[in-house]
Length: 183
Image 1 (tube, rainbow, N blue to C red):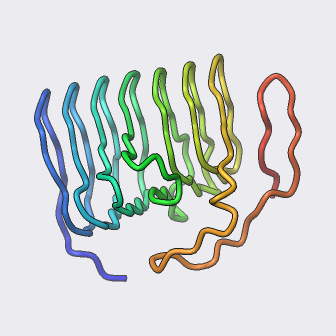
Image 2: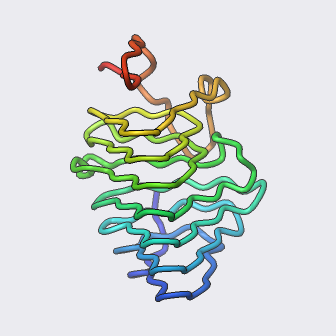
């Protein structure tokens, strides 16, 4: 697919912004206490850094489908939120490209409703995270008070903007923290 080139997208401390169409971004950076709202169905292809500073908000309007392709890095700081206002995990997909192979860090005090497909990356969930959806990663780690809730609605997920994904649940083993997927 071809996306309109949007350059770098950045919100400063306390800034408010909206994205209403698909595009390719060299980076997407949300400063402390900033709020970004996605107002219509969109695919965001981020070739570089995606970062959310403390207390930032990434809002997805109710009824909107968002797909985010990551090609660089991902960091979500403490108290930042992906607010999928529909609370429907099928409406937010985060997909890692072949070059997305580092660590995807989710820090303290956040909820997430969506599906994450980053088969080459390590995912690290720090304390006080509630994750509602599904995840496919090379490896992942859940730290104190991180909770995972698989949403069965994602088992047959098919959207116009995605191809069939070649992975599924092979086994489940619960210890102190759940171990979810083996390739």
